[in-house]
Image 1 (cartoon, one colour):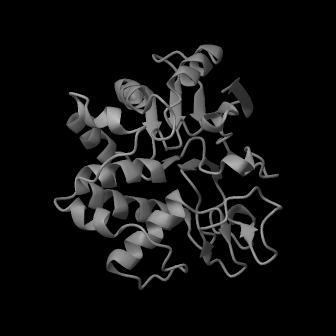
Image 2 (image 1 turned 180 degrees about the horizontal axis):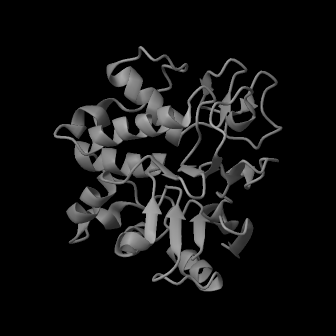
Length: 265
């Protein structure tokens, strides 16, 4: 059995099928992990949603910021972007949205000692805190009143974690950390506007995975950061978003062999 972590699809369905052929994926034996952002920008968001959903137990997917954006538009009844319009017109749209709402924000495999998240994990969070934070947000998305969350989810504040955070401030920080984070200040505050590659940021910012005194020691696989092109300089932090939707590569990473596979977009 092999476990392949696949980077941000963002509607790149053709490239996904070709990459799956390349790794010779066997659904009866292997598993695919998707780091989120199944939709948006690319031409085949609907096909990506349907395909991953139909994989059933052969796939594990965490939500990304673009997936949350799709859900927000759906629940608030706002007009979708051009690349998402096809989903609104699909006969199985509601079924797909219900499935998407039920996906986790974090996945941890104890046997592999590996955690998957879309964007990152705050350095001060332990494994237990990370899993609890992900569950806390997932419970809201699957709850009886997700609309209140979707109406208030966006914003860059609060930038610093505090165990005493409550309400939307708490949920917004969890959302930003798990699905939007790239850079932080040296004291761990989130800086959510810079999207440049590591090394090109302002001097007062550092990539989230380079923050010192990290509590979580497990391997972390993540996406979200296309300009990083998967390069972290660390064996603990594995980036798999290599910018397929921007004309670069779609990447799969095998957890058992530490081998990367690519298909050019």
